[in-house]
Image 1 (cartoon, rainbow, N blue to C red):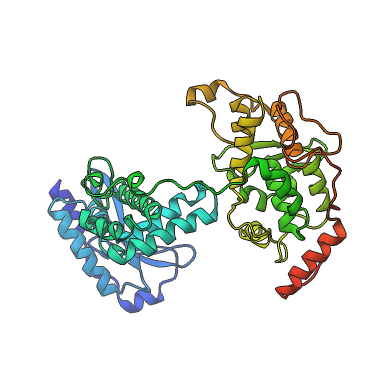
Image 2 (tube, helix red, strand yellow):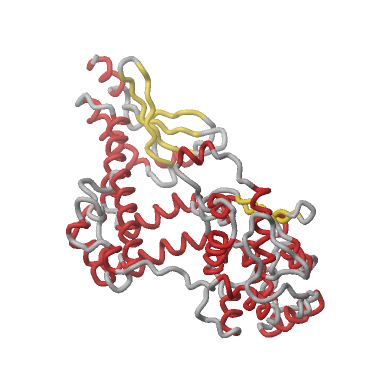
Length: 452
């Protein structure tokens, strides 16, 4: 075999010249000898190839285009390839191994910040929102990267992780706990990619739990401040006096027992007025599951005020073609001098009311809040969302918040409203003209074009 291979390369050599290479234009292969060829494609592209035969198979190794590799350089590259061949090494396989090694070396130099960027890019499509993505990046940029962002991810150890966590572990416990988890996941991703090896220095069990106090021991969970359900009718009546889109959105949030973000980003395509149903898609839900909400007459009255105001958003914001800001409903509470409350807290008000003042089963109230009910096995068998039963519950809740004249709760409710007899509404509900005027004023305040 060596003799046969040698005969291929011992044919005439240096048959080409720089001028000839420049003048040739007819498509084909032109030998310079000893395995080196000038190749011209039908499109007129010129490049160098090294041809050799190994185990009876002819192989071609590209050496680069003529505009980048001169004749002299091509001959030198061919000489190196022949030398490898004579040593029993396949030139193409040798180049592939060197390229793989080069990539491995480059990968081994990955910094933690580079890994953060790659991790987020690879996972952002699976996250609930762009906001979640930004929170991920912001947490790591602010607290982790100043300590080891530019450090080779392979070199990060427990001291580096502690340097990021300890300064905020007691002061910002919740943030620190999330930071630790995110560092752990990035480092785990890097290990899977082959950028590092060994144990994960950010893991909690059997490692950091021995060095840092458990978050639950540092700071007790603080629940969202909520309104006692006995005060709901008085509060709701006062809320009706508040002008603007945000006040109506807050009413809607209370009546549907929904989260702030679910209401702020509600779109008309999710609403079915005729079916009296609001269907929130999975990507907008905390649990990642579609949630159906029965709409009471009171909730529908609020929605009808906004028909035609915006083609997309149910509760349009001050900026054109945008929803309300995430502070809009909190600002309403502030104007009402109820900064002691949060929007999310009204969900707690609803839950306590359902438990103490009605006979509805716990599961119905939990489903109304889009909470998981029971174990994973129980959820698998409980395929119904008890929608019609929840409709009755939400009907009673609306009457508790704002009972109509002569209205009574269903047989499953044990009590009527806590404040005197049921009364006719003494506050004129906001009409479309009022809402348009308010929204117009808000948009003029931010110097945006008025379209209503």
